[in-house]
Image (tube, rainbow, N blue to C red; front, side):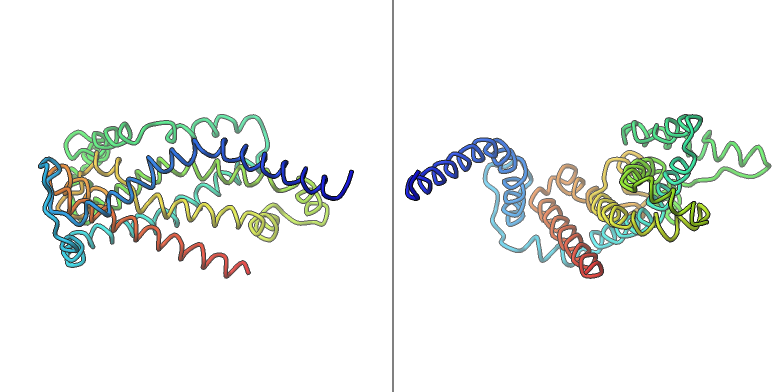
Length: 301
């Protein structure tokens, strides 16, 4: 076969590969364009209008909604609450999930399967169901906490109605729901550590705590960093459980950016400003995620 024929055949194969790739990627590109990119673009577009979501003729006001957003103290309180949830989620859920996964991995017996099942149950429940469950459990009158307090001679305890306690109460409920996710995540990371590494450390005289601290933990660190990014992004766009349990109250003590956006858009019928809140959320979450990933990559380098 001549060199010209070989080159022609290579070009034909490359063209066929590109066509096949385009055919398989087309549905994904269409879905991303319709359900991801267009809504993002439309959100920024609507944020430039004064619109109640119903009228056929919205009023163009340019950056008016954005100027109001920058001065909106309620939005920045909601952002601060999101940051609090993010920090607490990273500091509570991931270490607890790692501890649970370590317990199950080091145990290595079938008797521990019952713990896997029991600990995983919260993750199988919907956030709405968990919200209603804990709303009743933490109710001031008749709730579990208040009932135990009265049984011990105390008074009713109002955890969800106290502005100083409501956010941290909800954070505990969120941790109860999502810690099993990080347990499973860390268990999957443990499977990537060869068994020979553990056996070699035991032969060298290392105890299990020493193996965890000096060998397992460094090997798990990339997975833990990824888990931290997942927790950060999830905490910044959290909505459902808090909306069910507190609705953002009392006052603005548990208000989040997502609940504030929902109220502005669908309760106050201020769709233009609600879109500005949603767009602001998008920018803040994207910038924080990119900054975190860059910081992690620099430390690894």
